[in-house]
Image (tube, rainbow, N blue to C red; front, side):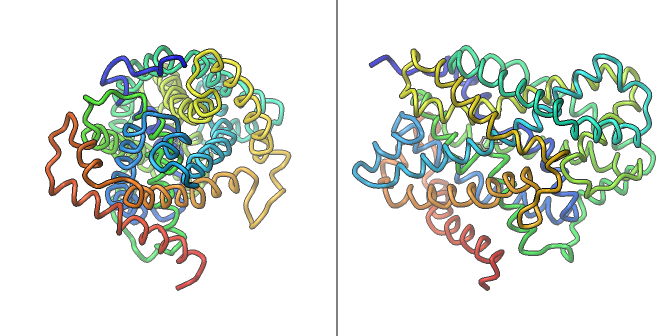
Length: 447
Ligand code: PFF
């Protein structure tokens, strides 16, 4: 049996876990879902869910992973041998598979925009023209599938190289740069003429727009942005030495994520209102708005290119984690098998994702429950599979792990106070299962 890989440094783990969390969810998905759900109220509910469900669940996944020190399936097997709990890990693998199949579509959009920006095709257009060019590009079947493939190939190559060399290095350089560029973007957006309305839209809650669907979307979004419910964080923390403080890592990841969500909102909505665009434009929102904001900056296209590069990396670091969880289970931590399985699984995901890529063009008319193939894949993952995965993890921890052992695990390297631990345990044991079930049943109209 070969030795399990480990993160080479503390910061490496935080960056990689934060890299998994921060991605399209905060930057692309949050603005458009918030835009469709009335803005401020959605934002507030999202923050609440992130704090009372997302953060505790993240910590729960961390403690499972580090206690067991194994992959997403075997971790449950080790802690609860002879039971069916390892199916939680299998569910995570399935979720990850579907997730990457549509995530790569958006990843591909970034690639194609980058190409267009670098080759000067986006210079000096009006905001309507940006939307037109973009619409024409993503509805082209050849282009959308080709760039989706490119995105998946990049993911495969890094995951095939293994944990430390690949994921950690990429995360270390890219994340801080992304923050800086985002701040610049926000400064430009909020100083546009007519920006105030957008800031109000994001920060002033209007609860008259809140329905049970809004609440489900906000919950799904908080799981999505933190990568919880999939056992990705179980997998990542299993590579972690015992000296690292789990609570501190979880808190810093949540804080970074909320910060990026806020920055994304403050970059997008002021511009949407200043340029008279439509906040409920759906998945294309960010891609239509951003070039217009950048074109208002001196050297705008250069900044736009830099932004797209970083955005691509943010998306890739999340994509790595999706492929990683599946590869680590199937290759059983054997570095020799990693390359082969990264390719097989990555390409299988690509093939399954093609219909999602085509649903912005030739397959756009095919709908089920009023959703395109892309929307349906996204909905199934974000609003069904992630809540179910999270619910099961919230049940697993108090049922199958000893409270004293949990406290010891969480205390290592952190000196966690008993009171905080009890609060966390209460949230996981009672609040999380009840709330998740309630939100899901509410949408089905049970109440
Ligand atoms: N958190 C990622 C994002 O916001 O883009 C998406 C994600 C990655 C969700 C990995 C779940 C996951 F397991």
